[in-house]
Amino acid sequence: MEDSYGIVLLAAGSSARMGKPKQLLLYKGKTLLQHAVDAAIGTGAKPVVAVLGANPELLIKEIAAKKVTVVINYGWKEGMGSSIRCGLQKLLGINPGVHAAILMVCDQPFVTVKLLEELVEKYHKTGKPVIACSYENSRGTPALFDKTIFAALLALKGDGGAKRIIKGNPDWVNVVNFPLGNIDIDTDPDYDALIKSSSL
Image 1 (cartoon, rainbow, N blue to C red):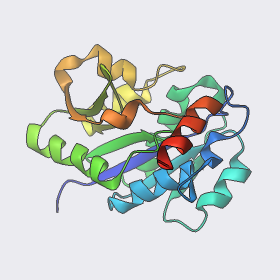
Image 2 (image 1 turned 30 degrees about the vertical axis):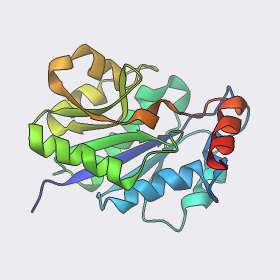
Image 3 (image 1 turned 120 degrees about the vertical axis):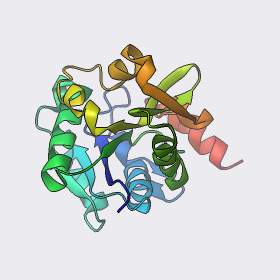
Image 4 (image 1 turned 135 degrees about the vertical axis):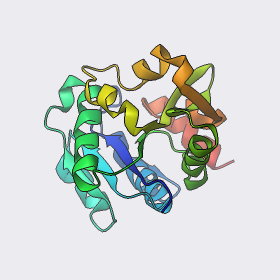
């Protein structure tokens, strides 16, 4: 059997800068959360774990019918590190033999099944323990982490997230180019620009 991998979708934030749950913003007929979940499920990864935190009762309805395991991070206010720990622990509880995990967020609307599969292909091809997406002189999500990196992920604290691992260990990392990865939705103007571009 080919190496198994799971996906952890980080969707626990409160969208403080936007003032409303950005996970529920509509784009091409689906919410951003649904887009992300559909891309994750489309890869055939097992399991797909969605980490919710703020407003869980609103968000669960959006994905209740989908083949995704939902976990609530009650410590979401601590920051991204707590959601990564929460999601990865759940993933390992379901599939303890998993070889790698992809971390992704739900405010990058241009993430596709193909992009996620490219991360896995690059992982097999290069043998590097971290495969990150590259955009605008940055390396970040979605990103794949080999099981040898899980201990470092589970040790994350605060709001630094997995970027700290990617930045601090360049020798571990190979990349997949994702030029549209720099488009993430944090504010109303970000969302307005996305909707405008999709109607062109």
